[in-house]
Amino acid sequence: MWQWLLFLIGFGLAVAGGTVTITYLNLVPAGLSWIEFFIFIKSRVECYFLPLGVFLSTLAILFMKD
Image (cartoon, rainbow, N blue to C red):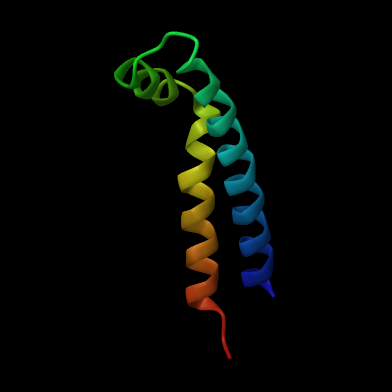
């Protein structure tokens, strides 16, 4: 049962982090270069939710039993 909870938490974090990262992509047409964009998202904590959520979801799937 804990695997489903871990999966749902990871999925929620991945969706939140992905949404924020995609939203910040609007800064590129506003004049930021790609290097400046990656430096910017590296400094934002909410952008780390995407890889953390993918990791937690993957971990939950690996531990799920048939």
